[in-house]
Image (cartoon, rainbow, N blue to C red; front, side, top):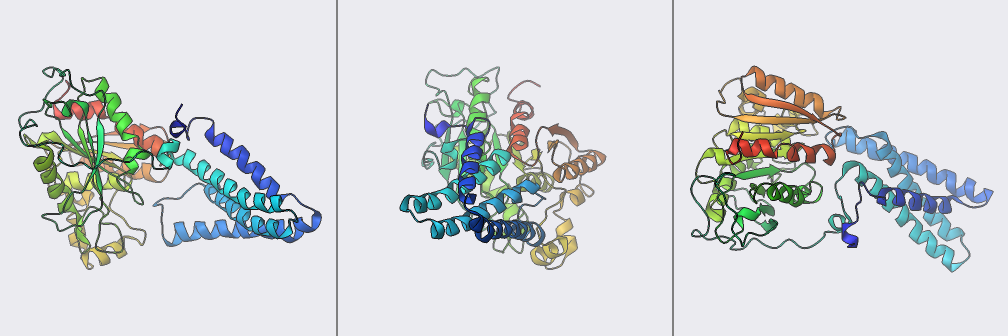
Length: 433
């Protein structure tokens, strides 16, 4: 087995890291009574204070995570800090060279165990390859020319016959999507091309734009979301047919905070995602050119909020949406008043014009449909998703609410996509409903 394929979530790796990290910490703690009093107790105290400081700064001051994190998250962090402090004391107290070497290695092992425990909870890096960067993603380049791709109606499961040269799996490419209309200067984007699109006589396939979370980037869908595996598995069961998946940079902003996928003082991100991204796909990949029903938008957490914002604000671009663990409105850590002041110069009406739950009270979204998924254990985002679903139904928007296993982690986010691929393909008209 390739070491890069080692499972860091469900395999024995998390337990192994915990055991080895525990042994390393115990070795750092071990010593005579004088060492325990002068080094261990102060180190533990520093670790406890450090964990509290990290909690206060990240959750109360910066709201870095967007939601409260479990207490053990900061307990592990405190142990990591204590391990580093103990290592300094151990180096000074150790008379032998090999003990000093161990004292340098031990805190690294402790920190690795802490990182492995946090990763096992969130599921951000499911394998060692994902955690270390894995294999390089090739640049998109000239994958398609106008003569190569279909420009007509989507191929359907009933009328598509896979050609002999169709590859068994799809491919992921790295690219840049320019802000031609919006002026947005976005970072790298990624594109998944399904097997049916990669044959010499490609199928005409739909387009799914997926938005990442914040903090984070488009590559998170590839690592934590295991997008290539999820899409290849679906394609294998459907004659190679699956959507082209576009993963744009959705946090590009001219301000100090993310764009929130809005047109605001901090850039025209709403225009970028609803106009520039589709135009680029149509021009470069010759996909999504037949009808607006060829398109869908989705995302998790911050990206879920973005998908809702774009679907309600730009229904002609995205008549289908997948809101995975999103919020009930665009938000920033500093609060709603700070958002309106910074993004809209204090104009609450300008914010309301793009805020999804305000938009649905002023316009009819006939033809729009969406799925809102919430994690069963997500006590912070689940109530917001339920609020959005209730408001959308009251506004006569075709939505369905789903509860999936997990909290605000990849367990829930991955399921939100994987469990709804059939629904998406039915909405596109590719598979029968």
